[in-house]
Amino acid sequence: MSGNAYDIDIWGLVVALTMVAVAAGISEVMRMGIGRSLIWSACRALLQLCAMGYVVGYVIRANNVWLVFAVIAVMLVAAVQITLSRAKGVPKGLAGPVLLSLTITMLLMIALVTELVVRPHPWYAPQLVVPLTGMLLGNTVSALAVGLSRFYESMDERRDEIDTMLALGSTAWEAARPSIVSSIRLGLLPTMATLASCGIVTIPGMMAGQVIAGGDPLEAAKYQFVVFAAIAALTLVADSLIMAMVYRTCFTADDQYRPADMRGVR
Amino acid sequence: MGVTYATMEMLSSDASSVLFAASDVRCAVPSPSGERTIFSGLSFTIDAGEIVDLIGPSGSGKSSLLTAFARLNPHADGTLTLDGRDSTSFAPQQWRREVAYLPQKPILPGDTVADAIRLPFTLGVRADGQPSDVRPSRHGRGRLARLFRGNAERARQLLPDSRIRETLDAMGCADIDLARAPHDLSGGQAARVSLARTLLTGPRVLLADEVDAGLDDDNAEKVADIMAQAAADGMAIVRIRHRPPDGRATRIVTLADGRLDSKTTDTETEARA
Image 1 (spheres, one colour):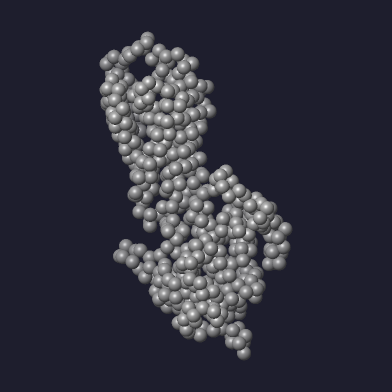
Image 2 (cartoon, chains in turn purple, cyan; image 1 turned 90 degrees about the horizontal axis):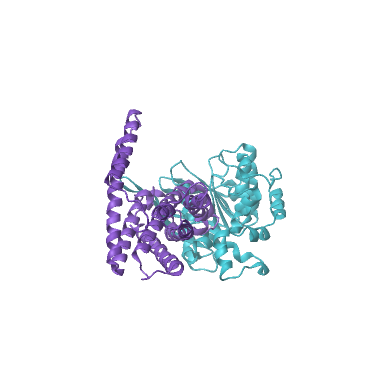
């Protein structure tokens, strides 16, 4: 670590794990039934984060463009898998559209944020590109999962309305539009809430990290803003792309409503 | 009149007076034990100005037949023609604009009754009816905005409140306030608004699915009057009904065990005599 960062030694991790263990113990006493999964999740998080730290450290040291993109590709595949497992009631065969939407969003992010705003040397600077992609994917994955779940739920709820609109001569897009708009809006809500509250209520994770690591707080704030702005805009792009690609799964080729049991819901 | 004969006459184009013809209509729904055929090989014709009542036991597939006619039924197929033109030469939206299915449940989205009635005119399929001076630019921003905004403004020009009011009054719906929220309407009012909405779009064939179900006799009578008026103006109307015959139908067709049986009513006999 550079600057005047304060390193955490092994005992620091032990203290953190102990805190979780105590919390789990209390929850067991109160019979909340989440103690085991709390400990399990904490251990998983520790392992995953350490592995991530190790991999990112290796990639930064190697400073190889192909390695950077290999890591990003793995992250993308994992993001698709997580999106699909979190989204409820979606039909099979969405992996392609989700991957495409995430890839386009990620490329836009690298093009705009990295190359237009930060302009690092070399252009693929791993310590910039890999964490940025991670943050973007994290947010986009939740937005897509929420958006997709909401879209199919809404299409099922609005079945009578959709049938009526189709009978009145609407296209599939016109009939699906209210569901598309409401699901994109719902997917964006957390991002917008973060945008509005950051700096007043919370110090966002990325900025906090830079400050703790000894960075200039104003520099950190600028970075954080750029990242938030990119995430807000690109989440909207990702959600719109996925909706444009999947709304037709609720319709037949003849613009008839296709109910959930004909969609092959997972 | 034999249906096969009618269909052949249709194919030989010109002289045919049959407005709408369906042949070889089949509907099979998926079930745990493979496909279950509800009906197959059905044929049906209707002329302009006719009112045909479709009756039959529940579950016999009456609604499925009407949604098949409107090309709304994903489980059905068959050959459909309007004025001798095959349905495959229409886009689905164009077809449904001429052959309108009216669902049993009145669904009226929108903030007011007027908005609910204007809904069909916000749709792209009716965009050609707009005055040329308000046509939005066909490219760039106008088009993108139209994708999301709908066309409330254009709909208001195509169908101003005053025209809705006139139409509703002429239909005996003077009791319906256009500025009210649709969910404040009574069941009978909602059914009439839903019917008025479809009639205002001027379809050639109206497929009315038990529109008078759940209405009191007074409202059912009003609904029947509105449809009789539309038929007198040349609309072909198929009604699914569970009520006793009201004397307005020219024919009563029974769908049972996958077969359609036609019976001419006294009204038509009198009309022919």
